[in-house]
Amino acid sequence: MWHDLLPVGRAPGGGYRRHAWTGADAECRAWFREQAGARGLAYEVDRNGNQWAWLGSPEDGDAVVTGSHLDSVPDGGAFDGPLGVVSAFAALDELHARGARPARPLAVVNFGDEEGARFGLACVGSRLTTGGLAPEEARELRDADGVTLPQAMERAGYDPDAIGADPERLARIGAFVELHIEQGRALADAPGDRPVGVASAIWPHGRWRFDFHGEANHAGTTRLEDRRDPMLTYANTVLAARKKARLAGALATFGKVAVEPNGVNAVASLVRGWLDSRAADEETLAAVVAGIERAAVERGARDGVRVEVVRESFTPVVEFARGLRDRIAARLGGAPLLPTGAGHDAGILSAELPTAMLYVRNPTGVSHSPAEAAEEDDCAAGVRALADTLEELACP
Image (cartoon, rainbow, N blue to C red; front, side, top):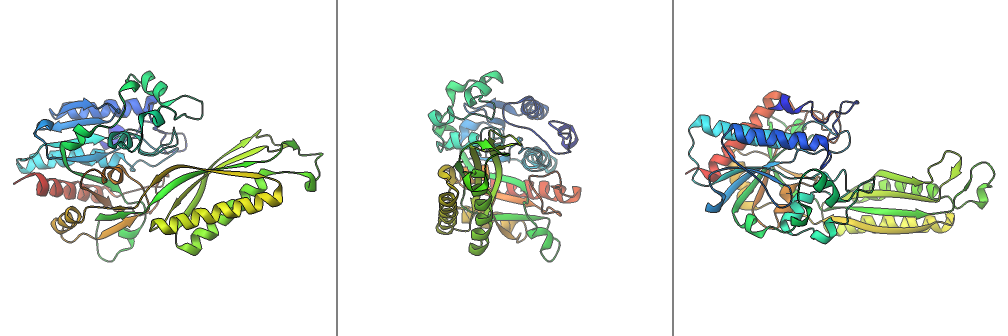
């Protein structure tokens, strides 16, 4: 399964570009359907474009669901998302090999547009399903080429008019467990040989758009003292973000920027930068973002640049269901509990149902990059751990 997926959406630099509702995404979705069919699982696509493969009848309720996503960030790694989907199918194979007889329905899911690489909002599929994203808001999402989410879905053969909250589907699910590559080195640096950990919590996190409005002018004729250069304000804000996050023990990253008119010999009229910030608690996160905004406005006043800040998304702190988390950790022989700053579909679903996550050791600690990695033995250990978890939850 893993090698079948490896070529799909491969970028020239070695990473992946599997953005939502593109050709690469369609290939991944076709692969998912093939895996479901090969196992005799009942396949369906829900109103929000998420894919499901069922062992047992979903109408029976109290189902145990596992899976992740197949899309990627620009030039992302091979493991973030796909490892969870491949491992989910492999875990069902492992249960079959053990002769396990589930007393609850089991399902594998591929949530759509988890990374938000195309439309700028993460976890679109799961947010729509839980009602965390209203259909009217989703229909306003656009990619860099001005294509709206409904247009992209329709071109891919899906009905955008159907999107929206799906409480009946959520009511059928008793627990959701997502396996994921670890996005850090906690397991790699931990004493002993622990290839698999269990998530304890997800830090609160969000995305903010900073618009720096200056004045376009000639780079060769405009005196420095006469300029209203938004690039200066932006650059200062990037440095301020790093300092304020460091002092608070938080994270802040400007990873995307757009410039107008974007000419080598022109002073910019507008610089638009997107801030991603995360912290261990919501109070710290709010203080860090407020401090970055203050620094931007103060520097803008000196540079003659007007600053606007728009919060584009926010996910509060997620404390995974303690009973479920502790039960899984115990079944896995006291697997270490790990917090994370990365958002996941499991975090979105946690507002509606019990969720948990397993992490597979990443020796590089790198994620959202081609350097993302996991050893084959560790991936196999992850499959066994997921199978143990499904057996614990679904088999008498």
